[in-house]
Amino acid sequence: MTRTMEELIPDYIRGLPVYVPGRPIEEVERELKIHAVKLASNENPLGPSPRAVEAAKLALENAHRYPDGGTYLLREALARRTGVSTEEIFVGLGSSEIIDLASRVLLRAGLQGITSHGSYAPFSVAIRASGAELVLVPQRHFAFDLDAMAKAITPKTGVIYLANPNNPTGTAFGAEELDEFLEGVPDGVLVVLDEAYIHYAPSLNRRKSEEIYRRRKNLLILRTFSKVYGLAGMRIGFAIGRAELLSAMNKLKTPFNTSGVAQAGALAALDDREHVTRCIATNAIERKRLSEGLSGLGLRPVPSETNFIFMDVGPEAKEMCDELLQLGVIVRPLGWMGFPEAIRISIGTAEENDKCLAAMAEILTKRAGKGELAAR
Image (cartoon, rainbow, N blue to C red):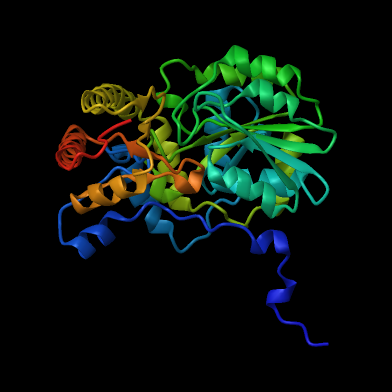
């Protein structure tokens, strides 16, 4: 019997959704022939660290050489910064690669992976791509319900994915809540804690999760250079975890998974505290201003601990995103993340946020004039 190549693809892979990124600003401007601002992908509007740019330029001179596959210098710097050994640091192709590797190492058919409804989509994809059963726990007030997640653990559970703060809702749980949750998780279940937005969270201290890690054998902390460091295009992130787990992940990662340019940029960005401080301060000011501006228009943004704002705007959410697009403002509809009536707006510069507020006011005014419901 002749077998097609497509028949070799397992059903659990065939059924996976394709990740759809936010539309590139160049594509929108080319299509609509207008100047646009992109507030869809939670990027750093102040750009990369100037030190990182200079280091990356210098690294390009050695682009004909393969990079350091062991990322020694960067792991050494990160180990000093976090107070762990270099064997407990894994450098990956952004956080995304590490999310995938955790499931590939620990899950398989017959096991279960748990995450929350309405959290970062690659968590669910990683679980399903391993052949394991995906268990989604409902949220409470747009936030992780850790009590419900603890109750969802079974003898089949292998990995639990948490995001703190959460993408796309922007909410966060405290260190005490995390510690209490981990008390009820068996040692044989890995808890992956994605802290991509930790620098922006006024209620959180990343040192607290590092302290908890030292007491727990089953915690893997993810961090990224894509957000506050402004290196999203370089695709580099890291994890803090037990050496035995990271050793297994190293066996499955792609050889030379991070470029020499990315490693050099990340290493320089780590020491550019002035840039990091400015990015955090600017984000806090603009997050408050944008949130208050949206509230003043009758909308109800969820209090955010991140560099974006989540809002439930009703059944017209996708239509509203399309209308904003026509006015040159790219934001994110969230149906694909489990919130068909919500949108997410990244915090931009003052000028970008002003453009967003003006466009939103124009849309709501037109709707009010037509007798439509302008806000929920």
